[in-house]
Length: 400
Image (cartoon, rainbow, N blue to C red; front, side):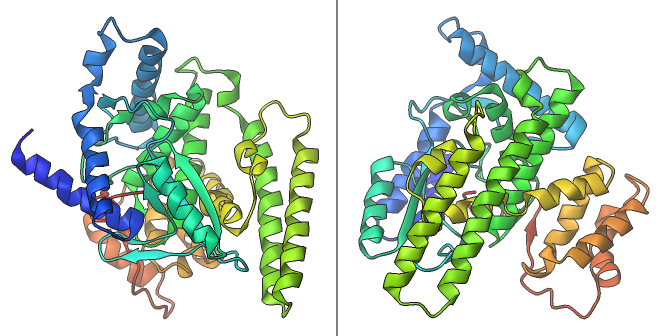
């Protein structure tokens, strides 16, 4: 490997660490650079892997499925992989990183960590599980709520050409495709400092993408892949969880003693678990089973808000635009130009939908439209400072 490439890995590894850990000690830049280096130097060209007789049939089949799903995403969804996922890395572990989410004992909001390059995120991540658990235990000892969650993928958002990881392949075939489409969504658009927006948008793209792929019948997928029914069930569980989270937020706003709030918090969490078990009792593959089978607290409940809270709105946006992916991505791009509160405004969404439905598809001159649309379409005396949408990935930090 050339020295310049190695230097870039070390530099970006430090950036990854600042985002993942807040640069708490000199160990973390080392482990982040080491982790990224492992992903890059341990990779093989997928074409070489496919002709390797030592590769097991299931891995070969999953890699071919990934390639076909990526081709479909580019041809039919407008999601270009931009040279990513052309190489394959074997990590021999269940997750690539473990994220640590923290919320105060009596707050439903996740703690945020803000950095000059990466913006603000609601987690810190570690390449080794024991590092994440060690940090989590220390934080838990101070009285905060903590959730440690392993994730199968992350994207460097253009700093490197991301390889396909063996962690992508460990679940179901639809799970592999959802993960790919989720990460492609981040490569297509990423907003600095708004985890809920980024993750809910990417979750919506994954759901829409796999349903479109299944309906196309271009690939032979298990019946669950189309899964409008499974998606509807998932939404029902999310409503249960988010309702419980909203109830806890009301509880914390009231002037109760800490002891009273602890009791009421425990009671509401127990109610949620019971309601979940009743709802999914006869479901063969209940959504959120791993989350709901473990201890629930403010941090774990907030995860659902981050990854799914806005997803139904993005799905509805796609429907309101006639299922047209070009218009959908353009709508999300326009909304992302505004600050966090404004981009959630239903009136703004309605104006974006109306404007795009009146435009001929593909007729926009992208080079000249940005400033005009902000000043003419949405100029209602609003303050847009701080809005930042990263459309090419580079510049939004090092880690999803």
